[in-house]
Length: 127
Image 1: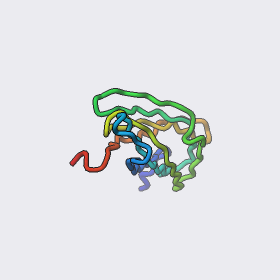
Image 2: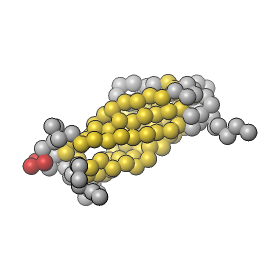
Image 3: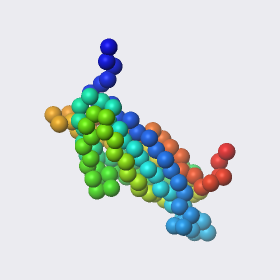
């Protein structure tokens, strides 16, 4: 029996601190994050939008929405993977991000691919 669904997007995340862009004495910390998006579903899907909730260490939230990612709206056939790198900043040495991608299949069906929460943190800040 095949358990594959039409709409199944896997997301993996890697982060890194950007000390060369950060200014801790001005409470400005920059981080890069690389997102891998893999279509594990049975139909092609295009990433048409994103929604991010970015929260710093003291709980201050920012919401970011927009079309595609890094100026692209990649279409992923079943089994294909797309990867991109972007960045964000905090006024604290760590924070979190989470959100969702709006995906659209060739027949116009839209669905949300959840981006799990992840932590961005300067090295040796947390255990």
